[in-house]
Length: 354
Image (cartoon, rainbow, N blue to C red; front, side):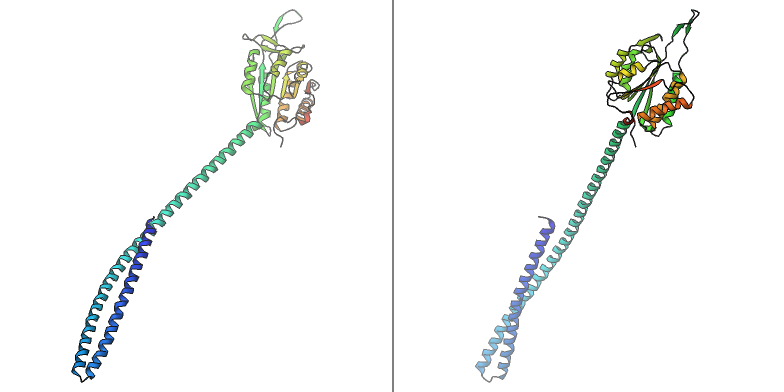
């Protein structure tokens, strides 16, 4: 039982006790009233009687009624004291009840405040969790929408014998410039935040799987030399040429991540390989002849710029060809786009289409 309930019960009990005392007091008040009336009547009769015996009888009656009246008045005085004491007790109990109610109200308010604070905290935690969930969803969405371009470069020292029989060093390709131009074109594009461009230099054949696994590319870009029979030229530990056969490259593409969608072979005579590897990926671009440094740079930088603006692969390839014409580089017939069976280049969007 709560203090409030206990004090409420005590207050009711005190009030009942006072009510009973007052009821009992009324009985004695009535006795005093009756005695007073009888005394007054007997006094009148005594004053009017001439009989000695009648006078004596009335005097005895008056004495009896006075005695009863005095006893009743004593009882009234006792009841008045009892009632006064009970009313003091009632006042104390009512004060205790009032304090208990105040304490209970304050406790309820404290509990309500605690509940509201906890509710506010829960809502805050829920809001924080919701914001974190939204952030994680956005991160997952961004991660899903972001594509990785892996630029693999190999530029070994290549010797050749000239018409006079002299051994000479073949001029190095401008691969650093190509990578720089591609990076700058991506940075100027609308969807630059959706593209991660990563480069790997002086690549050996034994590095290929490592680099592919590290980057998990959507687009795999090879830049370097190619042979007329469809081999790619990499380098060994001594910076000497090492050839990667067409069959080995096809197997490499087969073993790559499912995330890979496009392979760009910006090497001379690479169309032979490009045509074969589309059995395993959506699309590939290769060169059907030798290609000059400037042509390779212009074509690649425009291709990735157009992809970065959210264009389809069909439009991106077309714009890269147009760029060669705008720069008056007569090699627009060299790049070739190959597609897997049932795939249409106009349906390939490598970054998210708006």
